[in-house]
Amino acid sequence: MKRLISTAAILLSAALTLTACGGGDPLTSASPAPAGSGSASAPAAGGKVVIGSANFPENVLLAEIYSQALEAKGVQVEEKLNIGSREVLYDQVKSGGLTVLPEYIGSLLAFVDKTTTAKSKDDVVAGLKEKLPAELEVLTPAAAEDNNSLTVTKETATKNGLTTIEDLVKVSKTFSVGGPPEFQSRQEKNFKDTYGLEFKEWKKTGDATADAIKDGTVQVGNVFTTDPKIIVNDLVSLQDTKSAFAAENIAPLVNKAGVNDTVRTTLDAVSAKLDTPGLVALMKRVAVDKDDAATVAKDWLTQNALL
Image 1 (tube, rainbow, N blue to C red):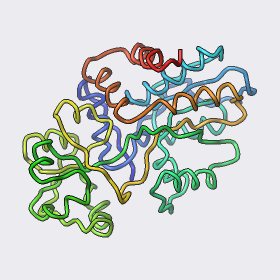
Image 2 (tube, rainbow, N blue to C red; image 1 turned 45 degrees about the vertical axis):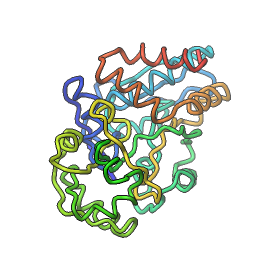
Image 3 (cartoon, rainbow, N blue to C red; image 1 turned 60 degrees about the vertical axis):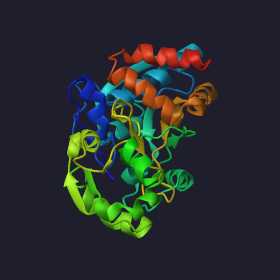
């Protein structure tokens, strides 16, 4: 699934940026790279590390975390943030113009292998090892995911005994489901084949899916797991126990020639501490509380003894 990024104003900025993707991939947007962001030759391992990011708040935050963690280990870092879409970013990492990029493993695999059917984290990682070019490598993925979900209100979950997507089978024929315009065409067969789900109605709620769940326009909807509106609207994302959605664990994509053991071990240490609830809390600070991403990154690294 390909996520279409939409960046609006600050609460809507990160929150809607993550929900507007609607079933796919935050690094897949049509945004161009800024002038001067073209690729260059890769630095020698142990030299300057160039950290890049896509042009949405979560990816900028992750890049800040990577950057500050590396600087704390004495690595010389240059930041090139808010560049644009995967179509731009991927080629820059491959050529060495960027050394490190926060990535989402399922969407990255779908980008490099259009025929992949991998869903689990292990299968996706195995697919990346096979399909990435020799210049590139994905380091150890974090537990944290920015993934698709089927999400309900806490009241709906409690009333109907819902904790997993499979639990929806007993009520789905009475539920309206919301998501982006392409959600039904991409997921209807998948949900039926994987879980036996059939919904009463599919509604095109787009950027407003989380709000549509909250106000009862739909009973369940496609919301990204790190969307701050899950916290703001007191929503519950149901567990995808049968992997209807491919794993989207966050992992550094690196140009091998530009990283050494210090870079690898430092980024692996970050990934070891980063989980989805923690990332949601960080994104609430960035998106809702309007805290500076660099400050939020520093606080998280300090709390996790990585600075």
